[in-house]
Each structure stands twice: as structure tokens, then as C-alpha cells.
Length: 195
Image 1 (cartoon, rainbow, N blue to C red):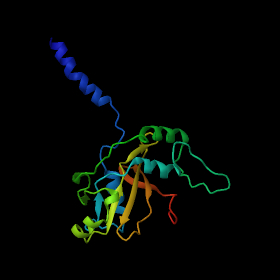
Image 2: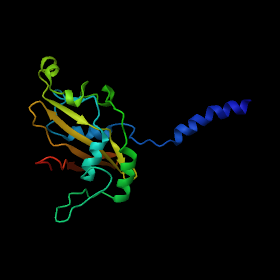
Image 3: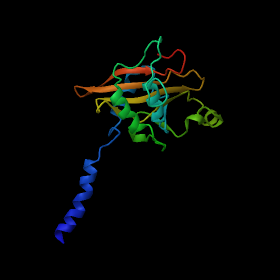
């Protein structure tokens, strides 16, 4: 009987400890990235509560919709230098089917206020009356692991009430000597003037 209680107590911990997390445990890379952005004023900007879907991250990183990575002949290839077909397929399989909405919490970004609105509700009548000084909102996705957890990718954009948003980016970061560094910023290929 004692052994049975022990087994019933230990088995859930084994399952929990062996389960691999598909998302990073904290949001330190995003916080580091936000600190590097000179045009971000944490006193005047909010972070949108609703996380952007990782399908946007995947689309921009792949330079196209879906799993296939297509490079058209006679065109400049803007594919990231860290793009690897095998790791891309793993990444796509792991993150492309998410359907549930995810939310940022106040404790995720203590320096910023969280705006409890959906992206399509930004800068509507409610906003004009209740938040008249708010001009820019930061849009972020959940960071995702890539290339055997060597890199973290996430979507970043700033929506502006004057419709002059910064280009959407996928930010690629990695940890070097216990510090997060930006490896690359990939602009959204679907907008003109993006880098």
C-alpha cells in the first residue's frame, strides 16, 4: 500500500518533468529587444493584451504562406541566413496549428501597460474617448524556439492611430554569454517599403 501511494505520487511529477515546453519559460528576449528600440516610450505606449498569432511569425520567416519554402527564379532571395529546411519543417509542424487566443499579463512586461483590446478594435470610438493620448500600440506574438532551441523568433509591430505603423518584423534572437542579442530582423515581405 505504501508503494502504491508512492508510485501514484511520483508518476505525475515524472510526466511533468519530462514534458518538453514548446514556448520559452519567460519573456526576457522580448524585454531585451524592447529596450534596444529607441523609438519606444514605455510611458506613452501600451502592449496589446491579445498576442499576435504565430502564423504571422511563420509567414514572415518563411517569406510566404504555408509549409513550402519557395524561391522564385530571377528574384532576389531574401531568406534568412539561419533558415534551414529541416528545422523549418519542425518549426512549422509545431507552431502552425495553434487556434486558441493567448494573452499578455501585466507581470510579463512590468514596465508597460497592457491594453485590453483586440487588434481590430484599436483606435476606434472607445479609444478616442477613453484613451485620447494613446497613439502607438505594440503588437507581439509568443516567442517560439527554432533550430533546436538555439534561436527565439517572435512577431513585432507598432500600430499607430495615424495609420503610419512601423513595418511588421520577425525578430530573431539568441543567447550569447548569458545575454540575449538580436541576430536578425526580417521585415514583412507583403508590405512595400519593409526591410
